[in-house]
Image 1 (cartoon, helix red, strand yellow):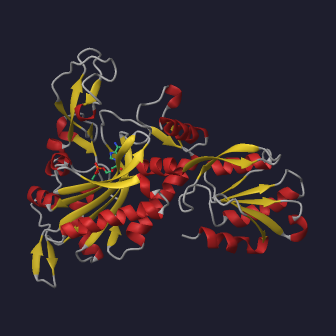
Image 2 (cartoon, protein in one colour; image 1 turned 180 degrees about the vertical axis):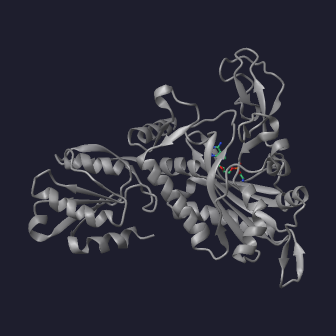
Length: 438
Ligand code: GAP
């Protein structure tokens, strides 16, 4: 199964989805750069999430907050005191590990069994604001986007005139000084979060917790993730984050085992209460119908863009066979990505670089690229070009051939069924629209 991880990591690099950062200097462990196709896939993941969590809902509004916040935020939220993992060091080789992630009693690096006593290692990145490097100027890179939704709660509620229950959504970078970053982009020190803080009346939190678990699971299924690879797992009380009354993970069966894909937490009124106490500002909500004030409870679905990216790639990766132009069976690698996620929606392929075909194919490409992210490829044998598009998950390939010059039609080949339809260029945009529309 680790072969799948290797195959996907290698495809990701070869085709420009993602590769190690600063590679010419030997890389920076745990930092990854997203190349041309990676950017498109990430944009599509964000768009699909925003569409489902904000655009199609009447009860969620957006926020894009600063990464650097007042350090008082992280004191009040409990992150300065409690956002840490147990760190142990091997007494023989001095490698450091997260104690709760050691696979057994021996050091995974050298096999010796003696470690230091665990000490709590705070995961927040600390830096300094302004030209003085002293503790008074210390700030943190945010380890979650959620806190801005709490400290901006009142301002956003008043500006948007939302009534509880309602949510605030945010997509943005987060940073954690993870002890053991691992598994490609699964666990990194810089990553991107997509979070909703959903504010509800106290007492309604458990019901909303159930709702969000199902809703989030449904989202992955709607984007084609195989149901047998997904499951919900409730946190045991000793795993709960310092702010949570209950939590569940949507887990995916990664090649390295079942692991967290998304977390859903019932954060109660923990954060609003702490910020209200620490800031001295009134963060209660006035319920006009009930004529009373209260601090809302919060249910939070939180997903990493990078982890979703890895999941969609792994889940879509298929190797099969197809007949070549010469009638021989060849290996065919396909990314069966949902059409909303596919980085390139349509590729335009002239049968050859013939001087009559190329301008016609360019005209067809102009029609297509005005509406969708597309590719134009005239390099090499047509079969090879199909394979190249299959490998990156392009749902439609449009071939312009010599008959196109007389009948004004092109061949549209669909990635999964491999059906081929002959369509007039006039109808091409409508044909594709029908099949690509979200
Ligand atoms: N505000 C709640 C929160 O941040 P979390 O369970 O720590 O909860 C939410 O993180 C999600 O963020 C995870 O389910 C995962 O998708 C992603 N994530 C967390 N740590 C990550 C890391 N080091 N690298 C990549 N993604 C990460």
